[in-house]
Length: 359
Ligand code: NAD
Image (tube, rainbow, N blue to C red; front, side, top):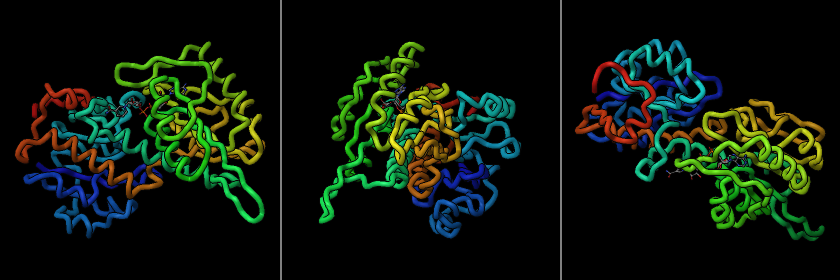
């Protein structure tokens, strides 16, 4: 079986789907072709891939093509019927891209659609990339704040610790809490899923009570709040937000626009110099004033809406993603041959388009 690793072409995408280290984990019988320069932006030169046993060449003709971002129309044009494609295909929001892959007859597997069951944890690319995003969000908040995070006792007097609020305590939020705590901030957090209170507290943060609690789906995700609950949440947060120096927001409902948690009025109630890092910017943002893809200052409050934050730490983001891809691939191969077991819950769950040629 041949695995192809293209160079990412979307602007700002510095990750690569497979790093040289992972080649040794793919097992005998899997040959790898990497496009020239595919790992450059993540710190993995062609020479490192060659040394690990890969060939540098055209990856698009391989039996399985693994990449990070969903293929552009041009890239999709290089795929053919019966091929397997693995990528972040945005199946809930990119209907056009999925239709294109259906028409081509490829077996397309979306990293986002891998069922979040225990057996699939090593393949869980949403979690690995959210870990990177949460960590980096805390660093961005620390960097943009005009003050220290930890309490400092100096000869010039005592500096109190910064207060950080993390909204949404899923994978990214919990990592942001842990990172802000390591930097010495006093951290509070809120999530609509009451079950996360214990996880928040185990990281040394306080669970903020905003008087709203939502339901959880079978997959562990939050259900969208009713308009009344959303309004109550916004009002409660508006009252509490002025006491925080930084707010990191990560709230998401899969396939939906991000819930608006912070209104423009709530932003204006914050102290000048405060910072909001909106990790939900890609799906519209948790803050009404977030400009996706940009960082703005509004009435002295910095609002960071940078998108694709995992790509700003491409070495480790790629390394984790690469292990996720290798684990998924292990499920697709028997003795070096491509075998798709459609009765397997993970194979069936991750598949978004199924080609005509049976594998
Ligand atoms: P996500 O990125 O979809 O959402 C982030 C967080 O936002 C979630 O915790 C959600 O509850 C919260 N949220 C949604 N609306 C909100 C609102 N209005 N206010 C405040 N918070 C709001 O979620 P995620 O981080 O990808 O994962 C969510 C859950 O999935 C995890 O907590 C976990 O239970 C489950 N999960 C399971 C596995 C596994 O078993 N393999 C792996 C990873 C995650």
